[in-house]
Amino acid sequence: MTALFQNYNRRPIHLVKGQGSYVWDEQEKKYLDFTSGIAVLALGHCSPILVQAMKEQSEKLWHTSNLFTNTEQEKLAASLVKDTHLAHGFFCNSGTEANEAAIKLARKHTKKHKMITFINSFHGRTFGAMSATGQEKVHSGFGPIVETFEYLPFNDVKALQAAADEDTAAIMLEVVQGEGGVNPVTPEFAQAIQTICDEKGILLIVDEVQTGIARTGTRFAFEQTALKPNIVTLAKGLGGGFPIGAMLGTADLFDSFSAGTHGSTFGGNQMAVAIAQTVIDTTFNETFLENVQASASYLKEQLALHIPQAEIRGMGLLVGLGLKQPIPQVVEACEQAGMLVVGAGTSTLRLLPPLNVSKEEIDEAVAILKEILVEKQVVTE
Image (cartoon, rainbow, N blue to C red; front, side, top):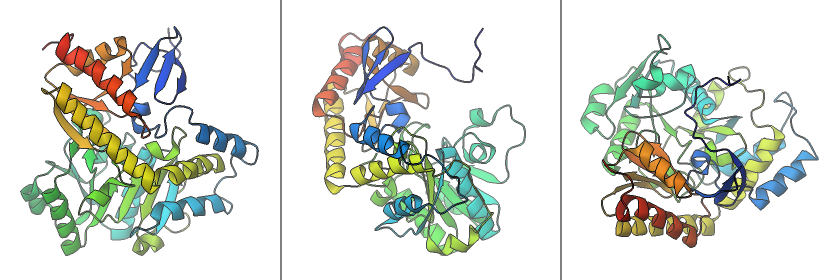
């Protein structure tokens, strides 16, 4: 009998060590990790610069709560909004918490309750974030969810035009639906969303929990679209493996998030902020971003060359392979071959290597996938 609740479908692998793009299990088997903790380990396992940042901060101060001034938070918030139209930040511990903050802020600022999100979206598992998520399987079993969310087909301009009205507080979306199948927003849909928000005074919330922090080759994925969000949520890669989330907002929202409106005991503690600042200083560098773009292009080129039957989707190093083979069996076959991957939706294999992945590691990953899906056809329909 286990002492743990069984709310995860865990893989039967006990990982005990990691370095860069690789991990080892307790049997000392080595795996190429193309999950990165589901887009968390932006700089790979045990990144030396993050280990150093943690060591240095651990000898100074770990936590004081948000009862006191935190100049490190000020610096990190300024780093995140620099050279954007955004102005302010709030720190928490996870993407779900960031989305909860965004939902509360939108409702409080507009004094409206209706929010539009999209089918196959994923925004978290607390009641607000779960209610924003456009997947019935996430809602099932918990009784009435938070009102009032309307779920529309993704990339359907006509459906959006029909649903958005004067009672709508906000439209909330992922630039690439990660958990829902690696589905990118189309340029036409992004433009339609922005036009509708501008014309009708609707707030725009962009969930960058998975796509942010250079994952798509720019600081934020929305920078590659027509979207100009009022609110942006972040987590995952922001801490490089250490828990931290953030909500960014425009200057006009400042007064709506006044003292006592929202809070987080652990949010933005000194340890998390020191590590996140190191991540930002590294990943928001122009040369680093160019390398992410180059790695992403190379990965997609090699996948298209060697696995021609796959439909390749995504942005940057958030890559989805649409396959006819059953995804759980593909994941298992990859593990047996020494590579960790994760599914998305019902028919998509998701590849999330560290942002500093090497060309040689990409070649290794493609070779494993080719052997499984093409040469030996280990997995069949």
